[in-house]
Length: 309
Image (cartoon, rainbow, N blue to C red; front, top):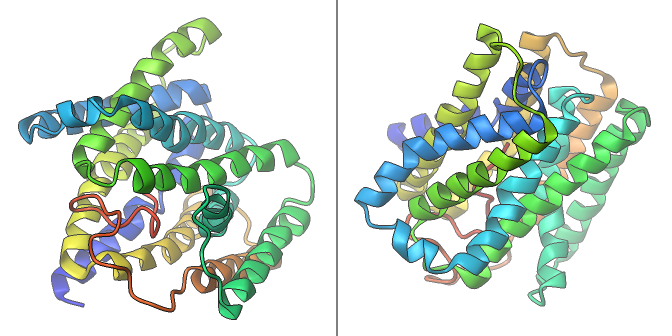
């Protein structure tokens, strides 16, 4: 890997590994819906001008039905449930449980009529992943926050379903346009939702919360996507999927070092098993077919999800 590739890889690993930390800080004072609204609106304001300049908005909006399904699956529901779950779960645990997205991707592919041809190694990965999740939920969380775990399960399914929708119905759409429009749509949906539920803050949030929202929008959303495009252009979509195994490590380190979250033996065991399972279940026996379901400048959605955290 070139020096540029290493820099992009490290930057993206951090950008997609720290959202859990900043979500944890933000929901300490703001309602989960308000966190989603602020994050998506600011990120959309940053990416929409670029998408308009590249004339990518119109072509994306014309495909509004699959775009709406993608936005609901990838942003509207997962970001709310993730923020809500982090009101009760440590940020490190949330980040680790989300490492199970590749496992859910196998089930999504089967349900959508595009089942993967699984090898013995892939099945072993599924087993390791399930054991890792069991270790985290049953022994680390210890059954005390099963509602939060169920919310994380919704996030995992959404993050696996979103790329599958892209791959099947919108493989030809430009990546920046897709992300910009989906972020804007998410913000539009959450304005009335926050108003009806009374989620508007009654006082100015603390500087820590304000900065958390800024980092979530600018670094973890807008900048992270641009870094992903650059990384894929530098090292290719297949090698770029290795970022999936870096993000949870960053999430755990950030939670322990910044928030003082405890690092238990079962956290480590679950971490190793989930990452090993995700790695094994995504191993392929053959190279991807050129031109098969990839957004221009974006990894094949079947290989990686576009909006971690």
